[in-house]
Image (cartoon, rainbow, N blue to C red; front, side, top):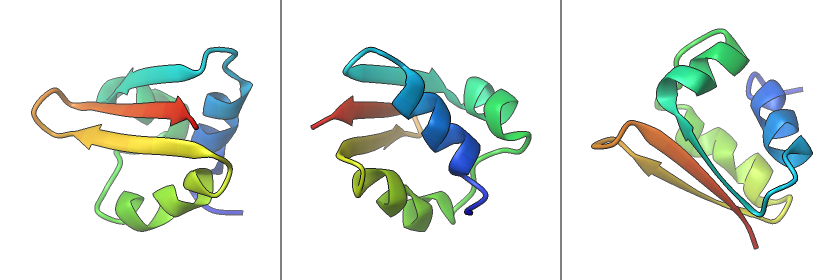
Length: 66
């Protein structure tokens, strides 16, 4: 189980096809800030059929069901 598993479960359990989460909400879900490792771990949810985009400018992570 990866350290990002709680976030993946949250995203998958959401009924909408697209979800945008501010970094602060991601921290609430995970209990820690996302870090550079997120770029590697995001492949786990991409394998579940989600596209992931990170906006450092807007401080959000976007998930879209492919």
